[in-house]
Figure (cartoon, rainbow, N blue to C red):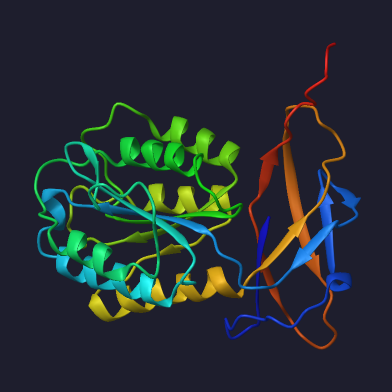
Length: 268
C-alpha cells in the first residue's frame, strides 16, 4: 500500500524509517514485511474529460497533463483515455507507453477535441480494466473532469466497488465554473477518498498546473508498505497507519482498506 506522509506545512516527509510506522488491519497491529521509499516506477492512467463542457479548458488540461508526465519517473508506464460520448485511447496504437515517450503523448493530447456528452463512469471502468494488465505493482489514475456524468452505462457504485478491489489510487482534479450544471465535486471527492488519493479543485490554469506537479511529486515521494493479510476471508479490511516522529506533527494518508483475497486452496 502506498503511504504519503506530510508535515503541518504540507511538505512531503521522505526520511522516515520502517520502525516509525505502525499498521493496523481491522484494528489489529500487523508486522510490516515490505518497506521502501525508493522512487520505483508505477503505472499511471490519465483519464481526460473531452466533453463539450471542457471546451474552454481543454488546452490547460493538455498542458497540465504533459507537465505531469515530464515530472514522472521516466520508466513509469502510462496510458491515456479520453472520454465524451464514448471512451477511447488518446494515444492511438499505444496500450501503454513510457513516461519518457513524451512526444507521442504530446502529439496525441494536442489533437483532442472537446465535444459531446460525458461518459465519466464508463471511462473509469475502462481505466481500471486497463490497470489490471499493468506491469507495475503500484497503480494510479489521474482524472481531470467536472465530475458530472451524462452518458455512462456504468454507475458510481460499480466504479467505487471496482476501484476498492483494484488496489488503485485515484487522484481527481475538478475543473468547472461555479454555475456549471454538470459539476459534481462530491463524486470527485468520493473517488479520491475511497482509494487513498486526493481531490483538487483548481480555479484557473496556474493552480491546475500545480495540482499535476503535486501529484507527480507525491507519487515519487511516498512510501510503500506491505504485509501478509492476517485473515484471507474475502472481506473488506480497514487499514490504519500511524507514524511516530518526536517533535513533529505529521499527517498520514493511505487507502482506507482492501479486500483480502481468499486462499487458493480454500474449500478443497
